[in-house]
Picture 1: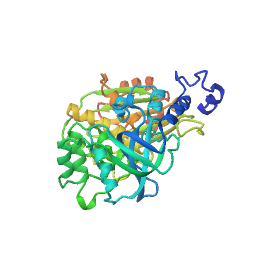
Picture 2: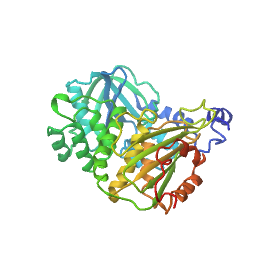
Picture 3: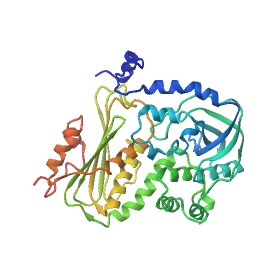
Picture 4: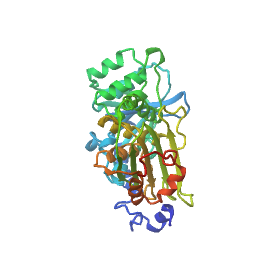
Amino acid sequence: MVSPARLCLLCKGSRRLCGWRVCPLLSRKRVIPKIKERIGNEFFGPSTSVFIGHNFYPNVYVGPLASLDSDHLETIDSPRSWFGKPYSNIIEMRSFVLRSKQRENVFSRSRFVENTQELALAKKPTDVELEFKKKPTISFEYSDIVQPMGPSASLKKMRITENPVIPRKTERVVNDELKAEEAGFLLYKQAKDVYKVSNILSSGILGLEKSRKLVPTRWSITATDDIIFKRLVKKVKEQKQINDYFVFSSEYLDNHFSFLLMPGNWEFENFEAWSPGSTWSFNLKKTEILEEYEPFHGRTKYANLQAGGYYASRLAVIEYLNRIGKQARVVGFREIHEGYTIPLGVWVVRETARNAFLSKPSRFETLRDALKHIDSKLRLNITEFIRKSRILRQRRLGDFN
């Protein structure tokens, strides 16, 4: 197998050897001239969200994210609407996100932090005036957790030029003396998606007044998935078990997902199989399988092997079970193939998993038949996963009848 790194050398963006219609790497270069035209020492335009860095914690970089592209204001900060879009479209769109930043302590109550919180709470983009210490640096940031970003600059001054439109229901939740976990779940129930909730959480506006603090964006994303899951799983554990075996599948950006739902009380196991040459695994000689598990009573340790991907996948599962009013044993399979070369954030996991549960499942009477079906969808042989599995190696009456 030729690694993507070598494919890129052979292709140089012209032969489409990776299978993508448009080269993701050239997508970035194509937008650079347009970005240069739109940046300077000052900026006026819409802020779509805020970003809190994690480096130098507890003295972190804080500031609004602004859009240099007025054509995609409704979608530029809405990962839920990105699912199905080509690699190149997402990279180009997010390259026009301008990150402005100022160093603040996480417990800061400065006017700048208050302004940042107002921008996070706003239900639509809010116009801001930004003055920078230096012209923004053209760079592109990619991460396994957060969405891609474009140029960045240190702030000299920021001014909000219009009143942020903050929903009254949101204001009530924020103004009540609620713990951050409770407030976050209430916002989620108000039909705020997890992306808006995590942005509000990161701004430091949630929680009891004395304990409020800024939360780095990459941490708030996973924390939000975990907060919502813990509330939903309590309800799911009280529901009746499913009767048959169900398989849900979806794929996107060379990420292949299958979820096996089995009769039994709630427990969850998740696999990630990283192919040689995919993101983070250019030096692997064979596919690496990572496994995480939690029993009925939950887990107490962070899922270090899969990090945010575990929590995003688990959220999609529990949202579905809560929706149908059932509980089940669940095993998730994710194969990351070599076409996934540039990380776009953990939303890829969350939305591909969610998409799997929007389709009609395949239904089976035995575990053997369900596993045979999953095996037909995976590149690796299903036995590779069974060997490592804590759930699939259990033997229960009915599984193999």
